[in-house]
Length: 359
Ligand code: MG
Ligand code: ZN
Image 1 (cartoon, rainbow, N blue to C red):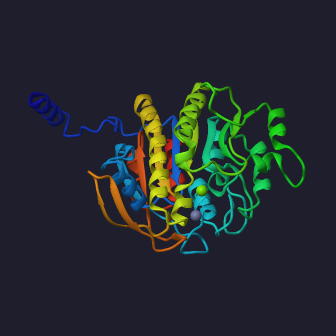
Image 2 (image 1 turned 60 degrees about the vertical axis):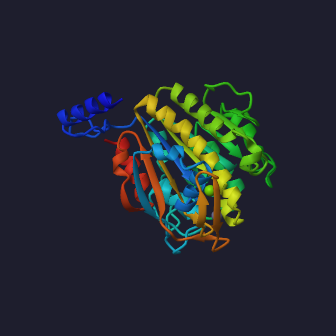
Image 3 (image 1 turned 180 degrees about the vertical axis):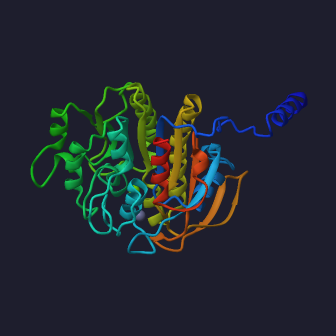
């Protein structure tokens, strides 16, 4: 062991003390083929650390090689909601709270998923709430108000999204206008299903799974739904061979933060971390995949008062039933992960991803 370590350090000195393998010797940074963008809704630093402590002191998210911080305020509020936060992370535009895929002047703005579509990449969205909910909607819809779920659902048909898994069946099939958008999607060649339990990877694209009428149940009731969805998405999108863009939301960390439920926050964050494991395992094997993990905002003003790695216990307090303005962490891994460091506006994150794709 000692010999191996000595050899490693000798080699490191020989190659100029740069054991990091991500930078190639050429001056041009390596372009990622695939992007996996993961958003923990309401996942501030203390949500991550609470889950880390409850897991005995470590998480998969620590495998990310770079970290940064994001300022989350929206165009009209010091404290963002998930619509303005999602729109910032999806499009690079600050907007007013409540607005989806539009800038503050109510003009539609292109999301990074739509850009990936234009580039011919395969695209996917996964959420544990309605696929029409603010965060995923910000990637394919353009609406003045996040509550317009049925209007948002209609935009799935024209979005070009190749793969989606989430809840929200009612917004497609049980609508005020009596139209059935699942059938419309089927007419446009989508395979629409209502469970992914027995779905074998890879599936043919386009594919959509509406696994709940509204939102999926909480983490402890939905089992390995989220990591399973991510695995199915990666295998299916990668199989097309054109590179892919996949957005994965750990949607319900936010709900548990609103409820000031420490155990719930921990369960949802651990569930999200198990999905992160699937993404990082693939990115490690694949070598051409940039993984960026962040949050739209913090929820609950969660503070960790005490805890124990060995007992896996946490004592936390909450300061609000709403969102807070605190900066949220960014974690990155893979080609050009080094760009996602320092303190930045939330709107810079999709711009950096876009730059990475356009190298
Ligand atoms: Mg959300
Ligand atoms: Zn919220």
